Amino acid sequence: MSSSRVLYKCKRSCYHDRMNLSGAVAIITGGSRGLGLELCLALDAAGATTIACASNPSKESGIFAVDMRKQSEVQSFVEGVHKRFGKIDILINNAGWVEQMQSIDSMSPDDIDRCIDTNVKGPLYAIQAVLPFMRKKRFGTIVTIGSRAGTFVHPGFAVYSASKFAVRGFTEAIAKDMEQASLPIRCFSVSPGGIDTAMRASLFGEEDSKKQQRPSVVAALIVGCLQDHPVIPNGADVHITSEKISAILSPKT
Image (cartoon, rainbow, N blue to C red; front, side, top):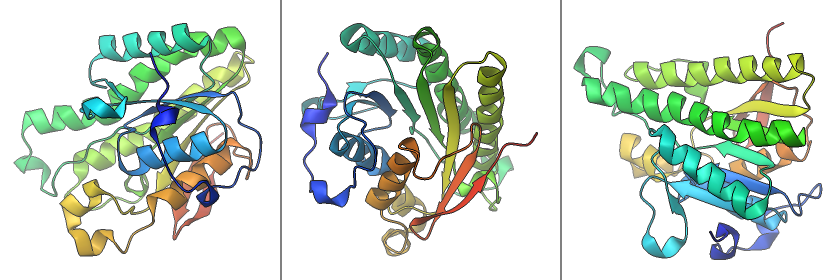
């Protein structure tokens, strides 16, 4: 198994290494494009070893092909990373899927399943896979990428919104599980506003997409959160809008 960190080329000056992540081993799902690719670049620039997976990566990319809807594939991938590097310090659940804008009664059962399986079950499978290794080390950080649609609903995206509300729910619950077990394992979610990605363009068009946040900037802010700039409470939801952290919603007590 080879690290994906050597595959990415960028202007390192885009990213600012606030704290030392050198030597950290990070898994990024959905890492072949958009925000996921920029997260790989930002973590690599900070000195981490990044191992990315995606559902359909190009053969030459070196990114691992993993269907997040299949628990066995997720488990095998995570175990392979741990076997190669001996630890997993960071998991970023970034892989996601969104349906075309439509009323719930127009959605096919397959599309409903795909959205829930990718956006909810996939991250949970990944968390299940990494947690035993993090428990043993008594160290780790789990970040799941949500969406502003998990706080403010939009017409035509009922299932997607439901999946992102679920992200906030299981993030808070897992954070409380870690606290109850007195384990220093962090778990928080990030809910960005619109980002200029191919997924956004496919939904709303290129003109709209280009008006949204740059994925490189959003990625740099997320890496800043990993480096405690700012310090994120366990179980919190970090909102990123207008290319800055606009709110940190602490979990309900």
